Image 1 (cartoon, rainbow, N blue to C red):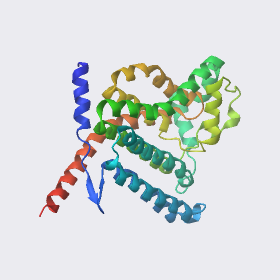
Image 2: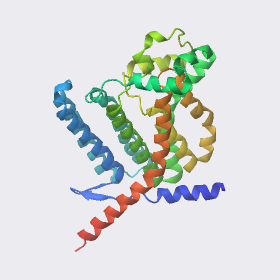
Image 3: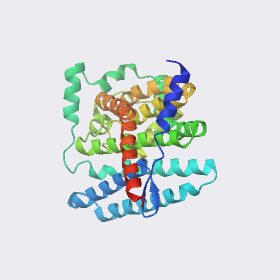
Image 4: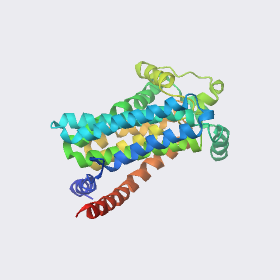
Amino acid sequence: MSDAAERLRGKDVARLYGRTIRLLGIDFQIMDAFLLGGLAVQAALFLLFFRRIDQPLLSAAKNAGLAALYIAAVFVLPKAKSQILYFLLRTGSAQLLFAYLFDAVRSLQMVLFPWQDRAVMAAEKAVFGLEPTIWLERFISVPLTEWMMFSYVIYVLFYPLTAALIFFKHGKGALEDYLFTLAVVNLACDIGFILFPVASPFWYMPEAYSVPLKGGLFTRLGELIRAKAHFAGGSIPSPHCSVGTVIWMMSFRYVRRWFYLIAPVMLTLYVSTVYGRYHYVTDSIAGIILGLAAMMACPSMVRAWNRRAEQRRVLEVP
């Protein structure tokens, strides 16, 4: 299929976005409903499992406060005259909520089930005959570790950079496509952390590793992220792999040259999650599958939202 045909298909997907449902004088798009729903469900879980969570009322109040701030951002968004201001407000508010929901879910991981690492390791041993993160120790070297950690860390910049490339080339609909698909995989990951809590290899069995991960700047940054931003859990599906898949596939849909340019990094990213002992192979495969599934499912979800918006519009017409 030609590049022109592929770009047209991307534009067709982008045209699905933009339909709103008005509540209390504010027009909400489908991503707004998902993120506000995610905040509400998470707050309800804080209150439901209050005996197993530290400061459940404070946690629920944080969700309510962030919901109010996000609604304010949605209200102000149509008034943004500058493209740059619009982009920063829309992308920044969404990605801040992605990050908050990920961090806040840590206190909910153990409310239903204990860690499931043993089950994951048993399954992988049955398939591979070994524990992959330990087996990879034989390949560890300073240059390889630095490349792996570069791929793992630079993904953080690809998140907003890809959003900017898509928005300034294809406009608001394409940006909504990108952000909504990211919202779906982020919320799906948060649900996975609760329904199947996995601590991750480094947190669950740090004593099993005899070869340290040594490298340069990016290795230090990767370890800093592990120490300061990560926590036991947050593993399956792998957020790095699910979000990375969306970033890469959205690049294929809208900015084809960027897709090919970052291909070596994105392919390495999948391996780096296991090499760096951040995830089991199972986590990473689940993340890739989730990212691909979201890419396929989101257009249908938007069409359903549009039908609902149209029904409301017809009912509201006198």
